[in-house]
Length: 327
Image (cartoon, rainbow, N blue to C red; front, top):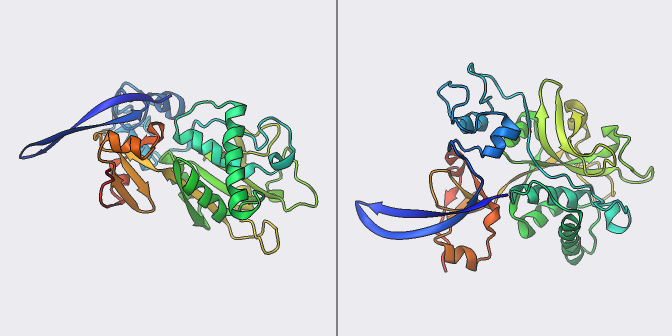
């Protein structure tokens, strides 16, 4: 659970010009290396009390950002990683009726929503409430919530969640791993029959369209680690061979109502972000960042404190800074 810290911003340009403050909900990071204490102990297995766990002269968080192990003195690429994300099945209560037999897109969106809000667990009721909201929004826009392709999924994410979505055509394994290294889970879209997973109850006469999230990878076994929304037995942390996974990527094609579209995934990133060394909180959208000028503005705009993510400055600097958000 994220905790609330009141952070004071002194703006000094030769002389003290003003005093303002913003509040940010961030996870504890005792050694200030950009990795939370929880991530260091549960995800990367580095030392939460040292910002350079392997004493190689590089900060742990920066090594992770560039895909290197924070626990190996000699430079070594990170070979395995699993993000901590609560699992949600597409039918959370096991009913498999109505929209709950086609809820893989909504369950995927919900899991990543919980991740960006810093949740370590989620109840069945909370999962179903959020997914119901997603069903209703799709019904209002398109008259149906079934078989949302990447474009519909991205729109729902960008308009109704705490994070952003970007559609990526023909992704590579390395591109997906880079996103995971930077603590950004990925949504993948598949022709499910190619996955060869007997635990997914596909209809023999159906489209075999399937959606789930990628939470990690393991280069020692050449597998992606996923939360498979449709797997009724081993959905959490389900592993797929790299080749099988990549060969099954396919967007939904509304023209023929089949999962035979282009290979696509959705990369995600936070809507609210700050760096570890600054109290400034930015609103991110597309390639733009806007500073939210103060706490009053933050609250008036109904931003969610839990949605603030601590990111690397080098990544945040890639966004174009535009006029700040103020009342």
